[in-house]
Every structure is written in structure tokens, then in C-alpha cells.
Length: 159
Image (cartoon, rainbow, N blue to C red; front, side, top):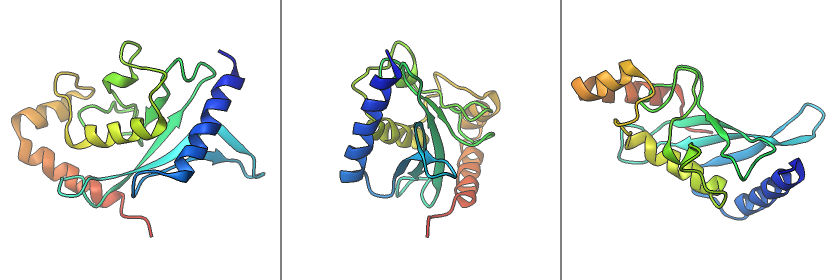
């Protein structure tokens, strides 16, 4: 696929997002100091779902698209050392829909961000990305929850 296809799709995604997006979420392409927009890198915020240990946090996520988008999934990165059993130390999200076998070109940015929000409170222990966090989740769920709530305080609501 050419970059034209990827940029065209991302431009449409941006228009759709501006018209309608889930409450509390942010997703916008990177803007350079000269005002130019880079559709291939999006800075996002995923709000912690109410009634969960993630509530109160607004979690930064960066989406990195390639010229192969939408045939290939973007890389989805939380900050380095983000605490979650399905997030690598690098911040890369481990989620089935991001794998080659699970990705479908019809998946939208909106669906992707909502899916990652779901993953926050409903981790997949069958596919851990971090051994320490997996051990806490399995052997000391109360400590895992405490660490999640502590992390939420690092990412306060947007003003």
C-alpha cells in the first residue's frame, strides 16, 4: 500500500473523530512546531472507566501508523514502564487485535482506543507482557489493584 492510501484513511478517521468520539477520549495527529500535521503519529488520551481501579486517570497513548495502514495495525505505546500486565516495559500494548492474525483493516481508531480502554480493566492473563505484573495479578490481586490506583494519580484528569 502506498502512503497515499494510509494518509487518506487517516484523514477520514480524523474527520470522523472530530464529528463524534467517546466522551473523555482524545485522539489527534501530531503537530510540528511549524504547524504541519503528521497523520502518521497520533497522540491520544484514554480515560479510566468509571467504577474501576483505573477511574480518575487519563492515560496517554501514542499511535504510530506505517505506510501499510490500514492493512497493518499501528503500534500502540503507553509511556515507558506503564503498569499493566499486557503492556511491555517499552510501553507497547499487547492486544490480540494488534497482532497480524487479529488485525482487520476495518478496525477504526475509535474501536482501537475503546478496545484498549477495555483491556485496562480486563487484562488478559493468558498473554502477559510483563512477568512481575502478571505475578502480582495472579498471586496478589490487592497489590496489583493498589498499583493501578497509584498509577491513576500519575495521570490526573485534563483541565
